[in-house]
Every structure is written in C-alpha cells, then in structure tokens.
Image (cartoon, rainbow, N blue to C red; front, side, top):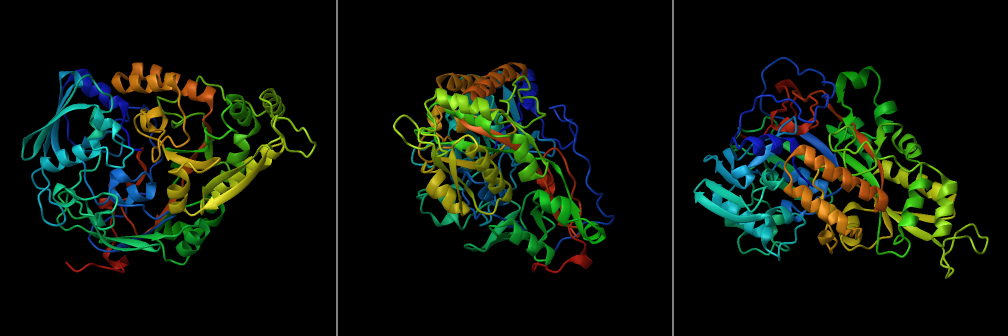
Length: 554
C-alpha cells in the first residue's frame, strides 16, 4: 500500500498553484521531530563501483508492480521503474519522471509534463502514451490488481503531447496526486500481453536506476546499475538480494561477511551487535517504522462472526507482554492502522484493558463456556473454540507474538495451534484464497490516511486486500468521504471516526508498531536517517574505491 501525505494536498489544493518540483528541504508537515541523525558520511568524493548484498525473507511474487501486494516485490520493483511523482526524504511528494505539474480548478484538473530524456532499458522512449497505457491497464477488469480504485476516480485522461497529459476529476479527490506516484509500465512491451503469464513479470523492462540482470528462483536476484538512468547512474554498480527465509540464518551470513545489510531482530540489535568491532565495521539505525503488526481474523469463520468474541480476545491479549517478549521493548502498542505520533492517529481512543476475567465473561455472554470440564470452551453445539494462527516463516517477532497469544488465550479456554508457512505459499495459498482461521501479519503504514483498498467492502473479494472479509456500511461511507475531502482538519474528523469504528468492530487485533533496526556495513557512505527511513537516497550511496570488491565493466 503506497499512499500520500495529506498535508501536501491541503497546500496544493488550497492554493491551486503550480506543482513545485524543486529539491529544497521542506519541514515535515506532520510536525514530527526528525529521527536522530545517522553517523556522518566520510569525507571524500563519491565514486562509482562496488556491490551491496542484502537479504530478503520472501521471494518477490512478480516484478510488475500493480500485480504485487508483497513488500519483497515492491522493494525490488522500486529500483526498476519510475513514476511521475515520488516521496522525498521528508515524505512529501515531489517530481520524478514529471518535470513539473499543475493543480487547477480546486484539484479537479491535474496537468503533468514528463521529462523528455527518459528511456526504457531497451532503448525506447518513455512518453505520455506509457502513462495512458498504465492508466487503462489499471482500469481493465482483467488486470488482477488491488490498486485500481484510485484510477477509477478519474473521469478523463487526455494525452496532450508526446510528454504531457492531463487528468480530470468530477470532484476534488484526496488521493489524486498520489495516484500518479505509481509505477509507469512500458506500453511497447506489455500491450497485448497476458499479465498472468507474461515473461515480463520475471524479465521486467523498466526505466529506473537498476536493471534486473539475473533471478535465481529461491536463491537471489541481481540488479545492475542502469548507465542511462535519467537522474544519473547510481554509484553502486550492483545490488544483490539474497532470499533467506530465516533471520537467524541471515545474521550468520552477515557475521560471515556474506551480507552487507539486513534488518536486525531486537535480540540481535540489543545484544549481538555491540562492542568495538561492530562499532568499527557496521552502522546501526533505530527508528519507529511505518508499519504495524496485527492478528487478523477470518470474519467468515464461525469463531469470529460475533463481535463480542473479538472484543473478548482484545481483553485477553496483553500487548505490553508481546512488545516485551517478542520485541524486547522495541515497539509501541497500537490501536489502528496508523503510526503512533502522526497527525491522523486517534489519541482519544482508549484501548481495551488487559482483563482475562472480563474476556471470559464476554465469551460466556456470546455462548462460549467450558461445558465438559476439559479446559476448552465450547459453543452450545459442543464445538470447541480451537483455531490455527498462521504466520510466515523466518519472522521471529511474529512467531514469538503467536506463542504469547497462544498462552494467553489458553488461559481463558481457547486452544490455539500455530503454523508457519513459507512466504510465497503463505500469500498465494492462504492469504489470497482466504484459507485461514486467523493470521499474524503486517502492513506498511501509508503516508496518506486513505485505507480504502484494505477496509472497504468492495475489496473483500478473492485476491483483494480486505482478505479478512470485513464489511461495514458506515466504514465504507467514511472511507468514501475521506477520499473526497482534501482539507486535513476535515480528514482528521473522518479518519478519527473510521478508527473508532474499527476499534469497536475489532476485525483485527492491532498489536504493535515495531522499530526498524537496519544494519549495514560501514563501507557504505552517505547513509542517514530521515522521516522516510534510510533508503530514500539509495542511488547516492557509495563505496570508497579501496573498499570495493566488485566493479561492472563500463
């Protein structure tokens, strides 16, 4: 889910000004204090060359961005494709493939002018026809995408020149600009292709800073620097993603010098990467992530159809125990789909207290009692409350959270089994098909508060992001209203009400927002923390010549 920063819309729509495309620093519109600065970059001029080897738990599902909803796919695809707009280090929209844009008629008309110097990696020009093709592809009902709703809000799309286009809306649309922060796809390559079977899902043609050089299924993906990248060739010659579905194995590879970067577990961050050698050879970072972890219920399951049951589970699970036990304190409890501390987070909501006795009473009210004395509660038909929690292999925090939840629910008479599944199968066979009782999973927290794709009832379809099957007409109305509202104060009212409704319905048990804990070799220069994290300037990272062990032929 890749959404926008609402404060940006207040400024632009309120003034109907030219879209600024400068790169001057801007204050964080959320009013947040920026994270502590990372170690300063070493003196010296950046030089080209070198390789960075990173780890990913999950293998990408495919490299056509609109078809993928998993982080692994988007992380790689972000280096292969470009979009008219993008986010800068302060999470503010700026120009990317577009050299300028205008917002007119109170946001009902957007005009874009693309840079004329962008080429696909096969040499073809990137033009407005490619943007038009992408737009039409997103509207095509045969396109298996969860991201079509933004494009459906457009009433007309017009190519006005080889490198220009304009988009018209019937009414102001809060996500209008961020829609055009989505990847542009190549018309000359994908036109007439079956997206479900096309070879370009694994052999992509992009226009970004890197080009896919090799993909060894189950092992690795290798990206080489694009010498014709319009913003200038990235400094690091080669990026290798190694697929390692276990964080303990990743860490062993890191210590052996076979990885240059990974996300640490709390245990690794606090206790296994300290001391002079680590401080000399590695850079560690810590900042609250734009992500949250949750226990999601299959609302089609007879175990979870009664809201009293879901509220009971909220009182039976101690989030503080999970943060302490699974994250060693490196996380914050959360009550909804937004990052604590941001303008949209509803601080007026009081979370359900940890109260196992109250949980048991609420379950009894819903008809669940231990009728045969075996320690497990049953319904009136004698069916025991016994279900399986699924999560993905290799994620220690989720597995530990599942174990703590298993213990706490056992204390109120609910039997929980835990099953871990390899990432690709987890998504394809269980999430997409709704084949689960409950799952522990996480979402990236979006920059814009719009959550239409995850929570609107229209997304509760096979392959949709509302895979728990949540349907609430009041929530649908709020989400629709939020998309039509561009003033931040008005949106705050809408999304506060949205969070309150979710809190009452408990389709997820929102657990925590973890800290991001990346570590990377000290060889990599020009790395610093910003509100967007550390990877916002990835193409400007560089490795001193005397520390390079690899160089591409020029």
